[in-house]
Length: 326
Image (spheres, rainbow, N blue to C red):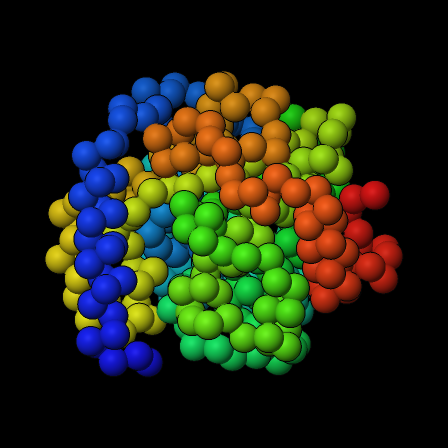
């Protein structure tokens, strides 16, 4: 990890950004003001054991949706499952184990899901990591990119059949405002070329989420399935746990300027359930639920197709059979 002194500049920048974001925060759409009931609908939320994912799953369960908690950790997932059962009284909340960094785990998860469910109205790709050191998975993929991008890419494609059978259906990809600092370098995906830092890896993986969203929307035109990406804002969650202690300390100190996990879940829920987003696809929403232009990379169809082709190959979708789009 870098020495603490080397982190002072970025930390000061983060503190200033938080102040500016708080000063500019506008009144956003509120889930509590939306009376929508989701009885008869099925929703799947990845990374539902903590933070934004937990809050999104709790809201969906309160709306009577059949809510699938896709979590990597059995113990933490079980605790959230029991919490949601107690808070909502909804018996149709289920825990399913899923490691989005593992292609094998994703395939097994989807196999079981399709056998047991068959219907999917809302897919929220929320799970993500940051601050990880460079590492390859057992399948030869760089860990940050496998978790934040390639895993959601494969999961979404394998579930497209269920989504198309449940139209109108929505896919929601949780990105970040830092995607503007990322780059689309296909060599990052396999570690053939290393990002300069864990921050660059995270920024680039979040950019790939937005690029993927735009290309998937193009391929899903006319199907009744929409897909959008969003920035949840600067949210106080446990996502910084892999960073240097100095970064974690400042993050904790600056917590008074940040959104709570519940507040951070608002833009995700806006894309997942609001009437305002009905029929809208391929867009990027800011943390105040307003439409915004994403990075120039995310608007380049040539880059999007190259990334899609490489992702199909790396996840095995180009072998046919499992491919969800044409």
